[in-house]
Length: 205
Image 1 (cartoon, rainbow, N blue to C red):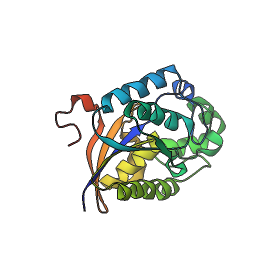
Image 2: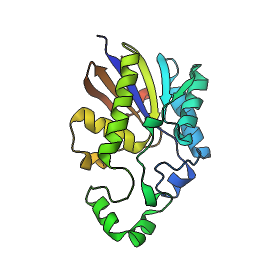
Image 3: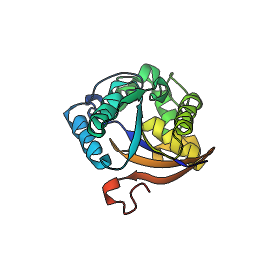
């Protein structure tokens, strides 16, 4: 069975990102910086042979994907299962606000646990990983772009690398970061993490 290459891209910046607010399933759009990041991502991917684009249905991801798709001449398929983790009551709050309102939960978060009343990491894994595996199955031998969120990408990389999910925030993910994961049957392999494709000699071969 041919290997499918999945490019996992984080969305561009929003005003909530800039102000340090937890977003989760909240739906703020990209800001001007985020749109510029999406345009830069589109330029990096032009000519690389991306066959299809999928995205979370939250605006910050779907808008990033559409900007890339317009440049590459591809339509975007939105999949709700690719959403960020639901952070429950923390949505819209800054770190200082969470520390003040939910000190016990904040302490658990600092310790690598889930401190909010939204989804667990297991619940996030249970929806995001099968969604990306299904995309890989639908595109054997192709290069596919999936635009999603920092938490979702970290979970996918942790699953591929067999990492404890408590350590996912040790994986850096700047806005519009790219990560390349190869899927051969059920065995994912991380080839490129948080790289800039313009600096890669082999690109996505």
